[in-house]
Length: 226
Ligand SMILES: Nc1ncnc2c1ncn2[C@@H]1O[C@H](COP(=O)(O)OP(=O)(O)OP(=O)(O)O)[C@@H](O)[C@H]1O
Ligand SMILES: [Mg+2]
Image (cartoon, rainbow, N blue to C red):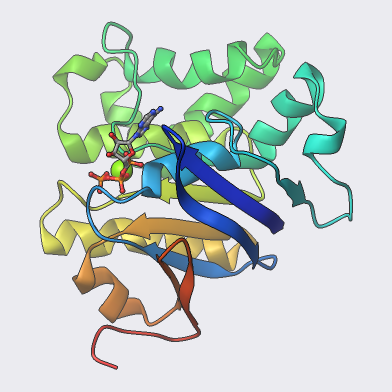
C-alpha cells in the first residue's frame, strides 16, 4: 500500500503535510508518536472515517482507491484493511459470539458462512469458553481479543492496530504481540500505532515517526536504545 501526498488538518491547522509512505506486503511496522498527537486521526483517515485533504491510497494491484471511491468500493476496501480501535468498539449488550457474528452480518455474509467462521475465530483467540458472556462482563484483555476475532472473520490483508497495549500489563502485552507476529507470518501486513517503548524495543521492527508535519524517522529494526 502506498499513501500518496497525505495532508491532514484540524480546524485549518495542518498536522501532516504531503506525506508519502509505502508499506509493503507482510511488513510489520510501528508508528510511534507521543500521546495526544494524531495517531488515531491518521488511522481513521486511512479507512476514510476521517476525511483528509487531497491525497490517495495506491493499493498493491496499482489501483487508486479514492479516485474510484463509492460506497461499494469503500466497503470492500474496509474489509481488506481492518482497524482494531483503541476503545474496541464492542456492542456491550451483545454476547461475545453475537459481537463477532454481527461484524459478519453487516457485511452481508451468508448465515452458513457465519455459523462456520465465528467458532473458528473464537477458538483462535481463546474465547470459545466465553462465547455467551456479554461484552460488558469482559476484562480489557478479553475485549481486546474479541476485537481481534472480529478482524479475523474478514481475513484482511492489512491489520492496523491502535494502541494495542495501553491497558495491559507488560507480560500480557507481549502475549498479544505474539498473536500479531503469528498473523504477520501468515502473510498479513501489520501496522501498530503505539507509544509503548517496551514493545517497540522488544521487537526491533520498522519504525516510522513524524515531526513538524513530515516523516522524521523511518528505520528498519529500530529501537529507542539506538
Ligand atoms: N474530528 C476531529 N476534529 C477536530 N479535532 C480532532 C478530531 N479528532 C481528533 N482531534 C484532535 O486531534 C488531536 C489528536 O487526537 P488523536 O485522537 O488523533 O490523538 P492520539 O495520538 O491518538 O492520542 P492518544 O495517544 O491519546 O490516543 C487531539 O487534540 C484531538 O482533540
Ligand atoms: Mg489514539
